[in-house]
Image (tube, rainbow, N blue to C red; front, top):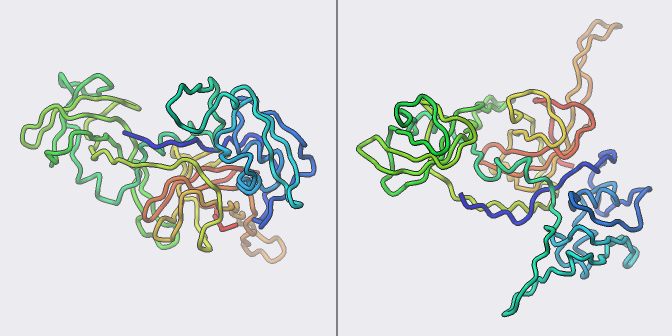
Length: 347
């Protein structure tokens, strides 16, 4: 499957500041450096978090400076300096060796490509499988899809390089399919509406022959062993912009964490979670939501009543993949252990 990956997402190892509300202007850390040398493994978010208490405002201090026309083309060895322009903090750039060998203007000449890659926005490896192949489908879609009937040579399970037989209604024009296994069924905790079904990516296959309702396929790639009964869905060509610009949602949004990748309940930093809002609520890729840890229910020893403690602001999440009724997000910061059921609110 072709992917458009312009830059990866932001590594957040340096983000340790207390989570505050959104502001119109970047807020400098009291301990911010005056200069910083970019090293391998840094990201835009890392560097911004060294300078800012609210690192989600990083576009403000990068893009407002003509010297840094494209902050996604910053390389290890470059030196970042904090200056003030018209009284506002801005970052300037002294190119290192890798940056000096980069040429952005195309022309009929030889171009030198730096050995070091430009720094990214956040760690792509944490959500790469979601960017490329993860799917949330409507209830009933997997049940109606073609299914794996048998492996080559009647193997029960098969892997990359093997073949398989599948049965169902096939489109004669479609040759490439993904193999999926049903995962969690997402239900809105408030309305009880079915929001979607997790389709777990298992393999990519290519049709070799079709005889009635039985197709013969070659297995091109697997994430785990293909099993009898796994379902086939057409390969979807999705161009995903993974250069994220964090921002508050366009609408005042309240949501809830309804699932965690891996089927666990506890949520930590850089975990991928599902939330019960999607495009119909005008949620978009790049939207940032504050995470509020749900308060415990305790017994008031004076009145003997059960009391719900208030939710406390405990983390930060960014949406990276949106479907009609639900979305996937990555936890950018978690000040304490989080769990399914915790609340999400607009900053």
